[in-house]
Length: 147
Image (cartoon, rainbow, N blue to C red; front, side, top):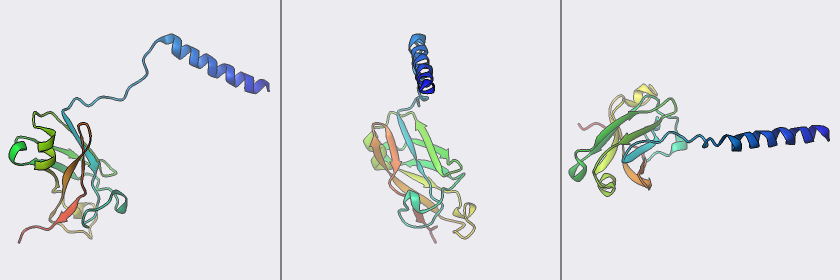
């Protein structure tokens, strides 16, 4: 029973010292941007691939390409070792224009993540607004090169 009381005493002292310090809790770093695009790039050439159906495409260069009302908007990011990417963009373009006039394009050859996949073509995805200023891919699909 004494050890249980000792543990409770240590926890109580730790909590009291944190409260007495007056220091604010550590916050995650904020992204200074008007919009954020983040997601997962699969190493696969299927259609509308789901996140769990394929390994991530490490090192894939993801480009945000826009037309019409959002034509001035462009950005890119490189996927990490698990195929995840994030890009922060400062813009005056309306969020509705981003959703309707922008897409994600991966021009990095699929063969660079799996030698059995095509050496040409792209992965493309529309965007969907997830929350506030955060966009996610609708689902990447393989687009073969034009003949």
